[in-house]
Amino acid sequence: MDDRLGTYLKTRRTIPAAQLTEPGPDTATLRDMLTIAARVPDHGKLAPWRFIVFPPAARQRAIEGLVKIADRHPDEKERKYRADRAKGFSDAPLVVAVISSPIVDHPKIPLWEQQLSAGGVILNLIHAAAAHGFSAQCLTGWYAYDDEAKAWLGVSPGEQVAGFLHIGTPKMPPTERDRPDIDKITTEWTAAS
Image (cartoon, rainbow, N blue to C red):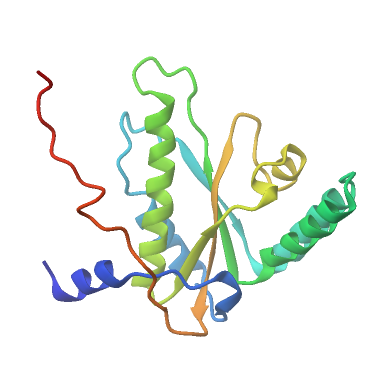
């Protein structure tokens, strides 16, 4: 294994979106990152996912719409929480939504496999960001599940937000956290008697 790649994969950590700053990727770099992200297992070559890019100029308008949607929530505490969370959409220089866009009634490829492919896109985009000198955090938030908010953000009926990737330059070094004990989560299959 390439030492640099092995070290990166063994030590990869997420930097919180609030700790990501300019510069973010330029248009050409972003295109390269998205091309890398799309190189995932995709049974049937369906590409059951797509990207929505929220550059800095567009994000403020997106946030304004999300705050208006949040303001209509009947519970005051939830209204404030949602409005505050919507403003976090502007933490990093760039946000890219990975949208799970499966072919629901495909005769050969189960929905679950298509959804897993979208998850692979997220991880590849995180790795692509790192390979280009950036950091990325995948978040969802209430607006990933609210039908009105999803429509405002460009998510079509039948689609789901797999994640919003906040991408930028880290303001801080990554810190380590506890990891699973591999022996506790690994078993070896044996035939049942």
